[in-house]
Amino acid sequence: MTFPIDMHRHPKVSRLPVAVRWTFFEMNGEARLADNDGVFTEAEAEYLFPVKHLQALVSSHPERPLVVREAGTYSIRDYAEHQQTKAEREQRAETNRENGRRGGRPPKNSSGTDSVSTRLQTEANVTQKNPESESESELEIPDDVTKEMGSSQVPSNARSGLDPNRVRAAGVTNLASVRSTLEATCGEPVSELGAVLLAEAICSKAKRHVSKVDAYVASVCRRTPEEVKSAYFDLDIGAVA
Image 1 (cartoon, rainbow, N blue to C red):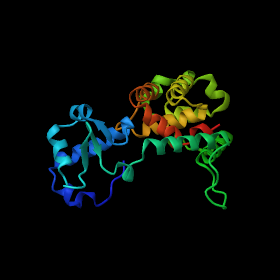
Image 2 (cartoon, one colour):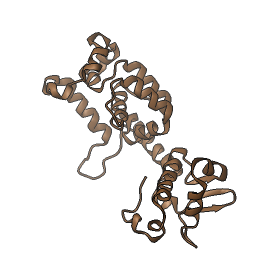
Image 3 (cartoon, rainbow, N blue to C red):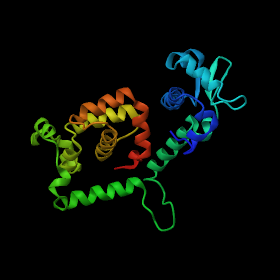
Image 4 (cartoon, rainbow, N blue to C red):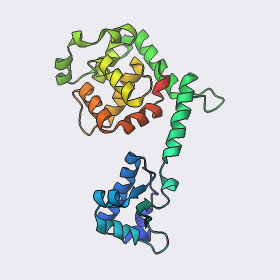
């Protein structure tokens, strides 16, 4: 979500109780999760948020309130000016898919800037060719993860085309299962390296240390599949070989 940095100073915001301001923040978050472009049905809005807060948002300004109530809906005013719309995200996803089919994003300038996927793939290739270049501290794994994994638990498909150290560092114990779960969630192809990168990205957003990466990734895929899909396209995972 994006908001103007001086939003808290705007009279129609600053005059509202803090709890009402927080409801407006929550509305933006729920709109993004629901992909509804800021438009809630009356029943949905009044179920999710306190009716008094909704009324305060609707009354925040006589002509340009933060929330508009009409035709049985509550709509966040000027939502598209501040947040990405569903159409914009779908267009970005299609662009990323097309770039993936072509081998990655094109350079941003004539200096030959690599795409995200190209840089990630290059880094992975260097790691595979020179595994000794990484220090032990960079590959440390928490004790509880080490005990759960054991060296024999690294799947054979990880050893076939992807540096096992990279898999261990990510905390993935069953790469094939994680990869399958991510492909089913994203509806797009995911390579072994792509699965590791996506798992790392998912775990990086956790509030606490993730000791059971496989289970956590599966849980996030079930609870917030749209966030996983967004990460897939943001990282251009489809172009990671």
